[in-house]
Length: 168
Ligand code: FEO
Image 1: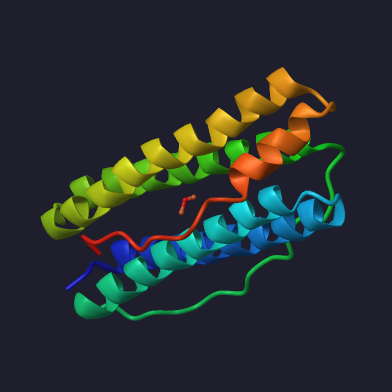
Image 2 (image 1 turned 90 degrees about the horizontal axis):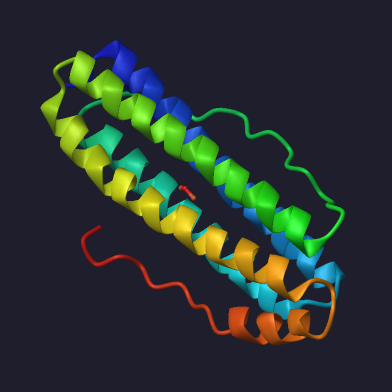
């Protein structure tokens, strides 16, 4: 069983994971519009990652006998001033997600919900990777500026593929 507080917190986070998918799909469209298909691909793969996160949490709540209540997903931002601003926006979003995951862990501990605390460890670790991968591209964008390096970076981001984690 999940406590009502945990149930609500998980339902809120499921919405955030699917919102993240929507945001990255919007970013993918933004990059496609700029003529940067590699960046667009990277963001589309990130969308799949977020759908995976949301579904992983959805299944856990079901498994624990919790009541899923899906919430309305807000429209994401559609445009940014530059590729750097767009990626920085995404990185800031990941920082906010990390804080939400940490708050969920705090709540699980407060509720003495050991199963949820253990389940959430996967997300704690995942957020370290998420921040690192977004941060890496933010740093590269700062280095390359608006010149030809942008197209080289685009080629680099084009090779990303979605690989579902095996320990799911
Ligand atoms: Fe689901 Fe990017 O955190």
